[in-house]
Image (cartoon, rainbow, N blue to C red; front, side, top):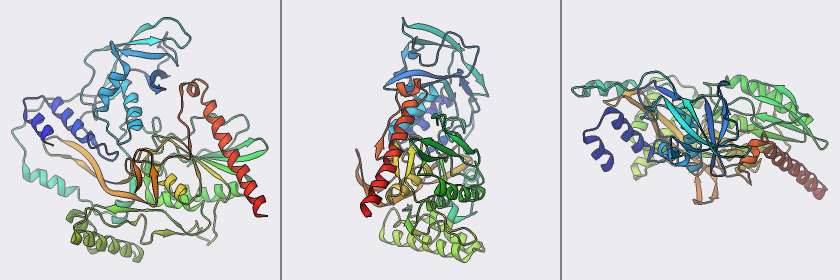
Length: 501
């Protein structure tokens, strides 16, 4: 904080001022600390770069007029600077707690610069890439145009802050819409990249094979793969957010889909990669479709202070709550007061949804229980965040699935957002107000034993890191490893059943 304050007290421009704010907030290395600067400026070159095996490659080309550059070519330098150094400069504004996630996002920003999060826009109209051909041969240079849109920061000579107006802005943001929703929404919104492109894409990136038969495309994508005489269900869960899909409709559709999979398949693959999260109650409802008995879903520890206490007490006082919601709010109030009385920073773990920390298997409105009982393989990666951390954690902690892929983000908490422009800086920002808590103590590589998801993420039983060879084979190696893993789960189930007999 001292370094930050010293930097902004010096004679700097507005752009440099925002840069210091960005670096300061990013230094917390918290996946739920996010910010947005007041700018609409975007600079992009119409291709994407991605890192594989510590090298950088052309991953996609969006403009068909770009010639002589090919997917798979290695990007050695950008305007004479090694690509890794350019990427590391962007990391200063993208601290997410998970180094692999931060690098993944920063690499995407190499060719897509939003001033909302990256203060310095390219000064030049063009950029020169030094590339090494995928097909072999000598490195070559390619010059591309920066396509610019929007408006950059305008320097602003303001005589000072109106403190009363600033206070009014903060008070106006004290929304008392729903106390339960406040603490059960785990939406990771800080990628600042296009939805359904970088994250939350509705269809899978991996090839499902010639034997795949599609069933549904919405609200969740699904189908069946035939492999070695086995029928393997496939379900892509791209979001848990009510801003992206109708959650009630999604559950209705899942009743039908899970019933179908239970009757007709030997195992199920759930693709939950690049899922940015959403509503915690929806996550639990989705998990309940795979449980045949009451289960635990963890909890969350809420920041115990007067602000949080005042919020929930006003909810109880000013709203006509249902008996269930009233009971849940009273529990939150009591636990915040207990923590404050004993000087604890956080409450004891509270239920994620409602007033009980134990949840029943999925029951329809007609009273019918629906659940999938066969083996489940869940695909995760470094862009699975928040609710995308929570779902695999619940499945893993209840021994209901095997996880395949790469460690999740570790955006393990609820967030508070100041969406009004704040003070002299006019930024908006978000920060963590609750920490997700796993019922099972887990030993995380590099972290030791913990019950927290925040910054540790969920680690798979079967680790698979996508490589350059995967990319160049259209992810065929990834698919093969996935199919091998799910077939192994089926074989183990058969052996266990034979052993029981």
